[in-house]
Image (cartoon, rainbow, N blue to C red; front, side, top):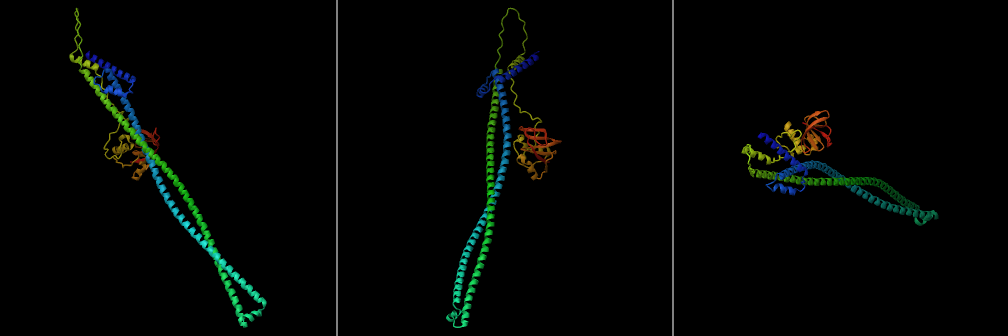
Length: 462
């Protein structure tokens, strides 16, 4: 009978306490944390109602910590995404730098060609100008000879018109002298004609040279126009690349700032969780102290009322049983420690992690995938860096890769990797880290991951 009463007492006490906690938790306003912290941690003599309220406050703080942890897990996932974006845009910046350097070399080469062309054009123009001056001089000489010839011919004609014997009589002592004079005039005339012919030939050669130079000059000017056009095109491309690089650098800087902000938020969140956990421990200690104080306080026995009639005496419970029953009536159960929600398939037993080149445990997909391959297949993979690059890095390391899923293999997605252990048609079974921040096993499409839509980039065959 006493055992039954004890069980009933325990059951009723538990129901009452649980009911009061749920009622208080639903009705209490825990927004004023300073009040509740002072109430629940700075007193060693809490009443039953205050103990129940403090236990409800503990439940509230645990729920708050759970929400904070979810936010921190979300921030970690966002950080991983941001880091992936930084790598993508940093790679673009490097590509732009390579293209800009190549364009600069091409522009320098064009500048050298343009300078050489301009120099050659200047030399041609100087040669053409000198030839033109020679032509003018020779034309002047020819004109002088022509005038001289005309004057001599006029003089000769006038002399010959007077009397053919006058010259003989006046200029020659004999007929042979006359012939010699006539031949001399003819020789002078022939010499003038030869000089004139030579000058005409020189003029013709100079004009032909000028024509050739002008033609070459036009060709060089055309080349120069092409060079200038090519230089302008390269300069335009360079401007576009510089602008693209500047935008990519701005994006990288923005993402880096976002990483810093996320780190600050993570630190604040972790500090808040640690502070809440410390407060919870203090509250639990305060509740335990209060319970011990209550248990140590003796319960006064009731004073018997005198009666004229005899009263049937009912045997009282043994002292030990009575003390136990009273303790049951006042003791409030200590809240169970907070336990994280178990993974759907249970976290696998982790082997030696000393060779794992990654960090973060099961909240990091690269750490998880490396560890799963190591623990299940005995293969220690190289450190391949960012998850998206694993497919290319693996091929460069000599691992076979492809687009068809096999078991075992590593599925490489956009910003994610996982170990494939089974394949069934267009579905494959993967084991992975960092699914919602922890370990997971599931069937997924061979093309993309559900919910996130991350495309499968290929498979690394093991």
